[in-house]
Length: 75
Image 1 (cartoon, rainbow, N blue to C red):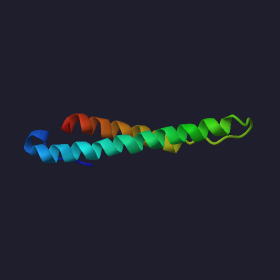
Image 2 (image 1 turned 135 degrees about the horizontal axis):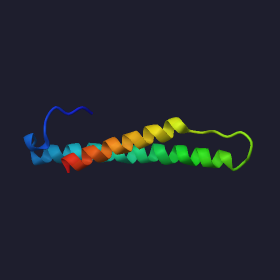
Image 3 (image 1 turned 180 degrees about the vertical axis):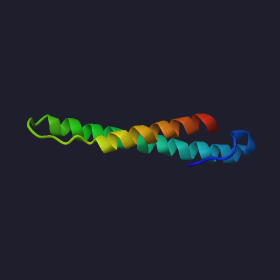
């Protein structure tokens, strides 16, 4: 979500809307991150080959951090 304006340019309702949108990014990012981590750890316990869900882990971390920075800006 690219923003060309500053939080001061928006009304209180618009800032709260933006903060809620960024909170959803934080939630979904955390779900992707921990989901990837759970898949990785669960498949490692069997020994031998395992699935390293690095895409989900990295995507989740980036989405969470993006949501966190946006939420802090608009809260």
